[in-house]
Length: 346
Image (cartoon, rainbow, N blue to C red; front, side, top):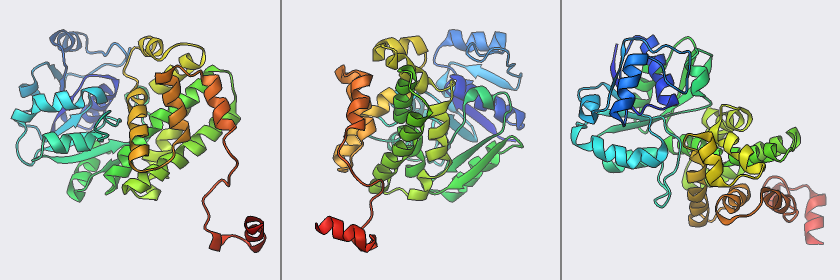
């Protein structure tokens, strides 16, 4: 049995709190507002997860020192725009060697840092991991089967998180490629916005499949250039997370994309969804990284044009479809059949 703090009180943090409590652990959830902690304590139910009882072994506090002190594991579950400010609040109370796993998906605008990068910068004595994969809170909290990846540069940390979270309905793999795991989990939100826009415009399964397939291709291209392993992006936190985020109505990014595809502005869509839409923040970072590493990201670039430059989703799709002709995959000239080489020479 471990003593665990969930830093953040959104749906994902709450879903994991329920899972960890079911696993027999003691769970303390930090809420950013006193009133929220009071309501959760009294009602034992999250307003965005109606009908799910939060058992007594889950307790709530708005005191960051109380939440962080003397815990076996800290689970960072705040929305990505608030990771830095929350980590700064935690810093005075985080001891050397403290285990911290981030379950937040997103790249910081401006710095282009992953969530683990931010925690390593602000909490340099801590041991950091990331837990990512296709995992909607609405399903995890109901005990529906889910599979996910625990990643860390430190093998013992990755395996510790695996042991803590593993259950008959929650299978956890490990990976040393924390960069690849976080990039896949973050950038898929940008592609999900595009998939939602396509749904909002009334297009079908053909386009959805194309966006998923070409989306993972451009994510992998960037991630590998940055030092990640290509097979990581073919796994749960890459193609797995991308599929579920592009296809599910639980996905905030897809929901926002649908609204934009129907004519809403980015601001209107975010207000309507009512929760943080991580892909909006990661989209700018994705384009910054594409310039820094000289990697073309055509889908992400068009999403940014729609979000921040007033381009219509219809025109963005048209420009994607009318891009110059090319082969699907990059093949060196030595690997080409002779007939293809002759064509190139001609």
